[in-house]
Image (cartoon, rainbow, N blue to C red):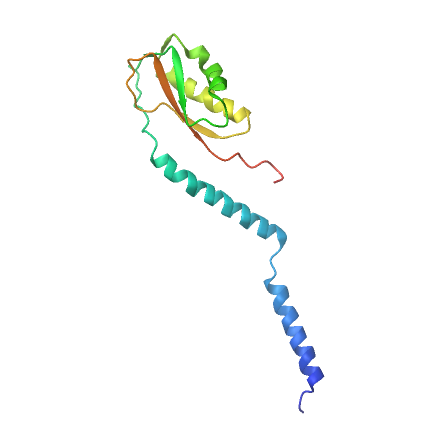
Length: 147
């Protein structure tokens, strides 16, 4: 028995529809893939910047720093004035290792309260001056639930 043109057309339509339905991704999968690609591109963009940053200062139990003011490198999301207010309780007093960790934590916490995740650290520097430099590495905001 020889297939008629109508039978062939129906068969082609059935096979084509079935093939199309199998390859059509759902919107949720496309959205997740798009978000993942965006995050990867952000990380790739940030990675070379991190490589060019100054190394972290080696701090130990004998480290004591007294700074009258603080300088912030890498901050764009929060102003220097906002960060100066955060660092003010640490000015004009001897800062030991634990105090320096609390200072960098306070800077990171200010960003967290604004909805951002950052890394703050004290880069290698001469500690004989009146100014202490802190390095801020700003990153993308954390994903909010439901996004």
